[in-house]
Image 1 (cartoon, helix red, strand yellow):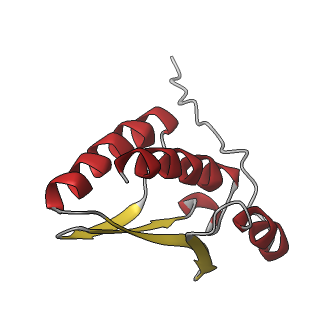
Image 2: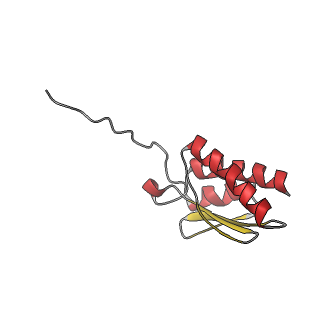
Length: 107
């Protein structure tokens, strides 16, 4: 008997720099460089920052898309890109939108 492994292919296409810049008009806290979109958020304290990170983590799992991020005390720095396209896709903007909604509630 032969065993076959099903491989899902990501149909997300890498966005052009022009498309990314147009989409960023809706995300004033975000910048595009080094093949990713980036934002930094500042909270009142570490607890509020970590709370937002926990809420974002649930969204990441739901979307099956995970950021590169760092946290130092009350600052959260996030970079989003789709690794298998080596660039930014619609999926990154979908997660950025979810992150924005969470951060707005925290502010």
